[in-house]
Image (cartoon, rainbow, N blue to C red; front, side):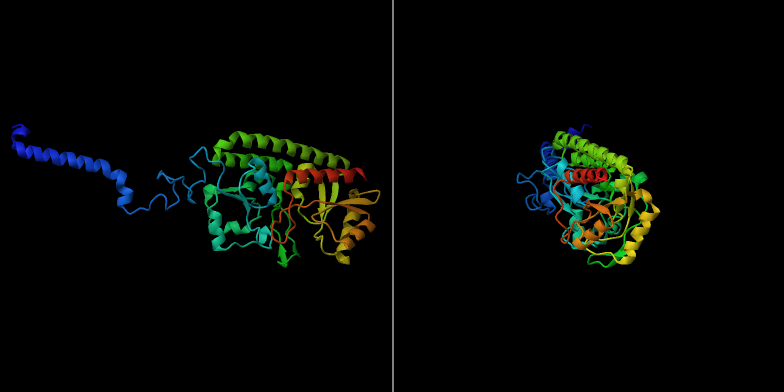
Length: 354
């Protein structure tokens, strides 16, 4: 029997009405479900005032925005002033914070609190130097999609170094890691890292792609010039002294040989240390030209130290690595590459004066 004959006309009308109402309810419920489940108003959770879905900003996201008109990533955390300067060169309006800069300690000694780690996790991008520069990062739960470790890009160029315990600053006696960390002092390594930083910024601010790529080209030209000058230094005088073992990558990129002491610019070495320096110069005659040697210093030496160096016929070139950015450190130059260029030119001038 046809289904229309199983029920009376009145019953069929009731069933049709129920079916239509049920269909409408099922159609409407998905659009009303957030409110029905007690979810907060988009305005209360930082969403747009028009109620549209806000751009994801949780630590689990990769920090990229789906809105192509977003001008910049919300925040980028970097390890030190040189890398901060590089990010600003690529994207001048970008907000950048140096990790641990508010503390009177070196990056290698910083131990962030749980609250500081939580703040780091909110960043759009967390840039680490790597190569043992941030021991704290090995214990911190940093979101992988938002973290970029620069040293991993140049593993084959990392330099092992002997650990040596020494004392300076408020931290007391300590030793540096077994890998040289000052990779930003190599123009060649910095060129590679600049390219990866540029890609990370473009991913987070695609509307700025053309500007970032143009700025990257400018950076690469400047780094090429710096490296050419550094190689010219090596042609004139390839053998140098240094106050501290922080110039390994500068030597690697320029083809220099640098013999390092463990001296501080604000402390007078004792006689044992002066004797060690004299022995080093005797062992490596190439360090001197007509009895005069060249020495890189990571900071302006105190007057007594400078005068003693002059008596020893050692000319110094102050070349700050700028790896320490904290409340106790001097204010770094705003443009690291301009400072880098001036420093290698000072080295060339000193080499030609021998």
